[in-house]
Amino acid sequence: MKKLRTIVGASALVLLMAGAAFAQTDGHGLPWDNFAYRVITLAVVLGIIWYAGGSKIKAFFKGRADGIEEELTSLETRKADAKAKLAEVEQRIANMDAEAQSILEEYRKQGEAAQTAIIERAEKSAAQITEQATKAAENEVKQAMEEMREDMAELVAKAAEQMIAKKLDKKGHEALIDKYLTKVVLK
Image (tube, rainbow, N blue to C red):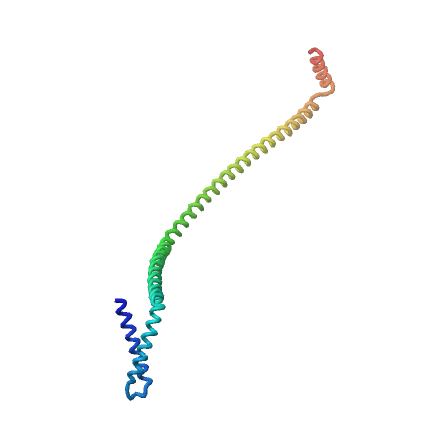
C-alpha cells in the first residue's frame, strides 16, 4: 500500500513537471522528444534521491509521525492531569467556607477558654485582696483596741491618783505607807 502511494505521488509530481514544461513552450505543439528526456531525467533524479535517501526520508517522516503521536499522548495526559488539578482546586474552594467556619469556631472556643481563665484569675485575686483587707482591718481594730486600753488604763490611773490624792490627807497617806511596808517586811 505504501509503495502504491509512493508511485502515485511520484507520477503526480511528474505530471506537474510536465505541465510546467508545456507551459514554457510556444504553445503550438508538444515537443515529445524533449518531454521524454525531461521525464526520464526527473525519474532518474528522483530514483537517485530515493535510493540514496529513501530510508532516511521514510525514517524522518516516520519519526515525525511518532513524535506527533507521542506529543498528542503527552498532551492528553497533561490535559487529564490539569482536569484533576482543577477538580482538586474546585473542591478546596468548596471546602474553604467549611474550613473557615471550623477555624472561627476553634478561635471562638479558645477565646472563651481564655475569658474563663481570666475571670478565674480575677476572682482569685479579688478573694485574696478581700482576705488581705479583712486581715488588715482586724489588725487595725486590735491595734486600736490596745491603744484604747492603754489610754483607758492611763486615764483610770490618773483618775485613781487624783481621787486618792483628794481623799488621803497626810496622816492617811502615812498610815497607808506603813501598812504596805509592814506587809513587805513580813513576807
